[in-house]
Length: 393
Image 1 (tube, rainbow, N blue to C red):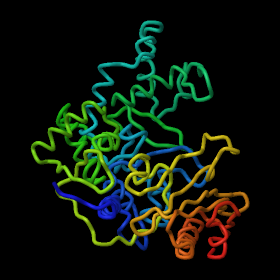
Image 2 (cartoon, helix red, strand yellow; image 1 turned 30 degrees about the vertical axis):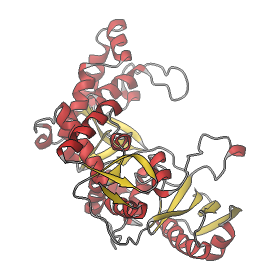
Image 3 (cartoon, rainbow, N blue to C red; image 1 turned 90 degrees about the horizontal axis):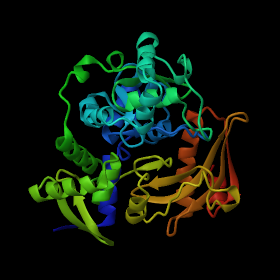
């Protein structure tokens, strides 16, 4: 069995995720689309304390770029939105790969959809018809959108129907305005050349998604491979075992990692990587927290929902990647009204060189401030790296 070191796996992982390549001088739509293709999936998140996560993930790979390029990619049908990890953008060519999941939701409707069909016959069909006649639309555009139920995030019936139509492939997201989804019938959103391609069914889709996960993670557990595209873990373990038996996945050992691990057979391991990036909490490098801790020796938890007095590092904390290690973290906030990129706290990992880390992080913060059109960077006092970083900035 092949044996690898953690640094080898980290370097391969970073390169596979597009973080080891030089950033383009003038990022364009092609760069944005290729970056999404390389990651396979770009997670969407609503938190806007700095910039939304999907934009931040691209910034980490491309540097300062025009954020509308992502929306242009959606409008020009170079990418589409689906529940591929969480809510995500994925390459348009992958539409047939997700049809199996859409068809499943069309066949096995959500409980609320079944209830609506019993309690309000014709309502689901009416929502589809209105979208067909008026689309792109939001739930509030419906004749009878219904009332929200429960907390502020509770969906009204109209929203339930539109979301089910979306998840079952009968509707697609035509665009987003101010982060709001606008739904339209699939035929008007997904180009015919992709709609008409044969769907990748059941077992074949599961195998393909596992192999794509392995390509982007390089080395992972069965649980990690399942998580990348949020596949059922029990079925994924069976698929991973079968792929390993036939040689499509290669079992490996990694020092200090006592779980069964699998590697993509065509993985390359660079001798060095010259990576430097601030990573948002929803970046593929760090979104699977157990793996981040095992591989990068970096304990990371999102503290957005932790009461402020109990937060250890801050509200929206960016791990800092330098070379093949996560060497620090910084709590960052864009104060748009004041025109300031604020860094309330900065924290060094054990063994990292504070002066070098601060110097390199300062470069990334300046790039981020320029991208966000903020004229100043203000570093606070929290954390053992704060003072050194303040001098470097």
